[in-house]
Image (cartoon, rainbow, N blue to C red; front, side, top):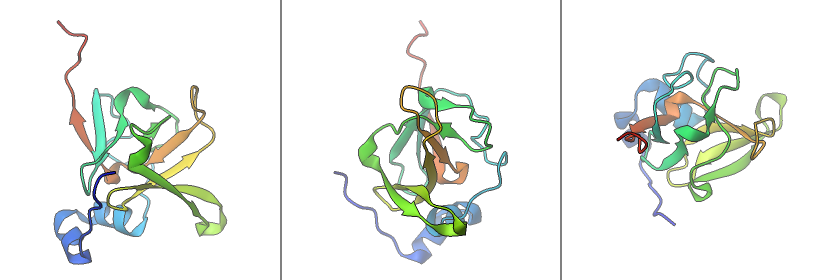
Length: 137
């Protein structure tokens, strides 16, 4: 397991913009269809905006129609953790970076095969690292 990343609130505020801070440190949700990655189609890896931990691969991203980036599996299940979220009169499963405890979004059981999962993730919790297309000559 990777060592935990722990920072003070002031350190998080200094390194993140306002929306990134609100989403990752206070479990806010960005408006649907507003984030930089909801309609993003490049090949690469989506990492945690707070600690750069690899979270999702572009080949697991799909258009769920919900307005947030959606993935059917995590890149490495050890890098994300889940916890019950009882906020707003609902019971949902929150998805959190297992390295820095950043709020990422939620996971639902209405996704496509092969997992049937939909990781509904805030763009503000992610960074994107492009990878070369290995099929190009």
